[in-house]
Length: 584
Image 1 (cartoon, rainbow, N blue to C red):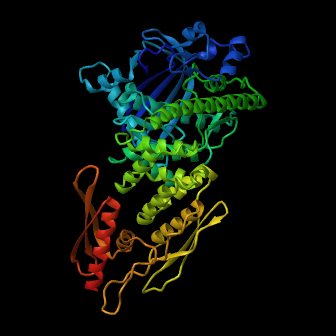
Image 2: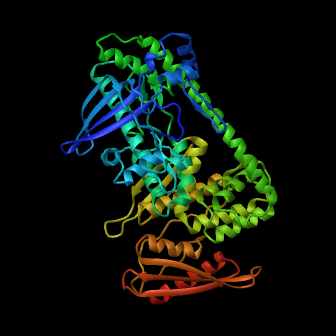
Image 3: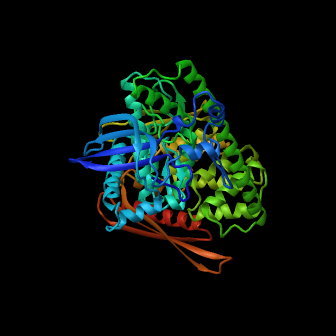
């Protein structure tokens, strides 16, 4: 029995054996149905509560203390249980499922950390079994990922995905192999129970999760970015994006599939002490295993599911409101202090959003935003509030907004991110694209237009779809922000040849033009580096840009100086452009 330290509501235990090249896993779940009669006072109250609530200062159990103690599993004490027995092949596929009553004898209670320590200790009596269980858990996880589940564990940094694919924080006690074993075996047991019920055409409370507003590949890509070694800065952005686009799962007495797990059928049966739907399902499964009719009519299951779903929705809304209130009070205090340089980039983003939302303009904060834009440290999602917020459309905010748009023009890939996040947050939908080829076989060109909630970008052309999209996104960002459009068509990629000379497209910053050459393949290994001299109050920044010409392999270097990093980068880019023209 592996659970949180000091748990008093243990309701599951696991045992794993090797079965040839595969495994046999047994998941025992406390027989709560034996203790809580259907339709009694305690059952009605449990249905009203829906689940155990784990609050910061206390736990509010679903069942009264007496019934919880009578039904819970306890170390060393034999107890009636509902057993789900699984045979699993070497690839992690379920090949046989058995469900029925059983007696759990001699259970051992352990915390997640104690299980992990036993797994690492070759002399521990449970080392062998936990080794098999850990290998099985990793195989099950690999199989789920390969099948398209939104499943990631980052035990080192302390986060994981829940069943629906959202990012959740892990407590310190959960950041180990013991937690992984329990999570994967419980998901496997829940999947098995759903399959078992479907095979018998048995109505239970299935856990259905419907498709959100983004594709599975897009969401998996977002998770991969967050899980990358350098993904810590992206984690909060990805978590917010997933929270916006993924709908909550619901209980229904019919199969609807589970998007986050990418399963055709899923349910909950492993926590009947803590979740009322698990208790309902346990009663149905044990009755079916004994050859008896279900104790529930389908209409009753419909009513129960609706009641539980409604309570969960209300609980989510209250929790979100409470967290927002606490976070906003802390952010207001930081905004008032006006000591911003030591704050991390995520906190600065929160201050910017609050300052715009509550119309609390601060010249000191505006200067700090500009400094971070110059240092390329501002997160793209934090540009949305000052660019699009109604309260920011004043003369006070105008220099900040113009600076942000220049940054996006210089880094047009960020314009795509800003536009996508704004569309999800404001309209609950993705950007739509009209694209078509407009060039020739020898000189390919593509045209793109971005559409969002009735707003269209100008049509922009470029030698690649990606660059055309970036320019169209930049144009739509400018239109939505009510600012002059810095986007432009990107000329065909030709540097070589004595009769062909390129000029910087009208309105393009030189650095943007250099980036475009790299995007279309004329330059490779493009790098920007910065140094600073002088006093902290009046520094002189120097930018060095290096690149290789794709046609000749020549190494190019240029430098530029200015009072800000942005000015230095512009000067260096202009010098490199002049050098390219001299060599053409």
